[in-house]
Amino acid sequence: MPPRKPLELLYDADVDASSTAACPARGLTERTKESKSIMHVGLGKYGMSVPTSPRRSHVQYVAPSDDEMENVVREMESRMRYWQDKRREWKAHKTQLDALRNHITGGGATHASLDLLRRTLDVMEATHRDHVAAHVSSKAEIAAFAHHIDELRQLSRNPPEGVSVGLGDDENLFNWEIMLVGPPDTLYEGAFFKARLEFPKDFPNMPPKMTFVSEMWHPNVYSNGVVCISILHPPGEDRMNAQESADERWRPILGVEAILVSVISMLSDPNDESPANLDAAVEWRTNKDGFKKHCRRIVRKSQEDF
Image (tube, rainbow, N blue to C red; front, side, top):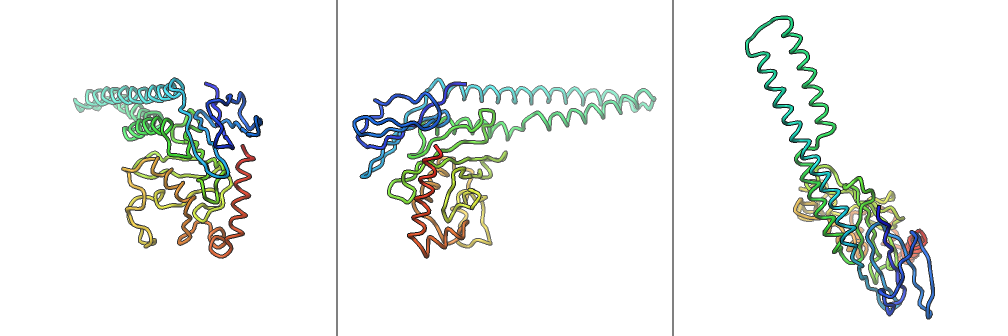
């Protein structure tokens, strides 16, 4: 496995990101040069630099290595071809089994040896069905896998501002690791939130589930970290939720980028009309100072957790 790339967090807008040395180890280190503090943080396979200052914040992405990204993509495409080959192989086996059954039953014979062959064939067909169900992916699953490869390639090279995308596990393309930088001029500015996107097998027909791994205090995030916004709700009308139209909910034509942009917007503008975290919503409405203090604490914690 190639070495993890660093995420460079530059706490001065005038620091040149190209002049900083890569951190050799995962985790947080600091160095000071000419009164400019620079921290290096490991972040999966894909890096980005985040220069900030008291006056302004800006996110500049360091493109992942083409060779590194292509190695991941080639591995996934190889796995997809393997699944396709398996489908063809077991489809051929099924054709052979059907031909054998027709040959055995075609004459209508009732000899004991033919009955034994029929029972043996029943067992073979049942074994075939069980093996296909356990080991051979459906066409829909293969199509979803191909779609994921394409989205991962695009988002890792050109993610939305303030976001980094990678695989949490190289063996599982349906579990993504997300890093969100708190948007400038919000209560979450300066935070580095880890999150996870888990995709169902019927994606993109159904939306993924997004969960903050880092502690989060927000009206639209459950206490267990699960994000509750319209775009992550199943498609179609919800008669129990008159405040939300079908156009606001998930649609198969949408992509992961739309989800990430919506989550960044959620951090900038909480919706307390139908909250997931009632305590956070009440504090947001009635005690803004307390809410801000709570947010400052989780921002500091997110930085320390790096």
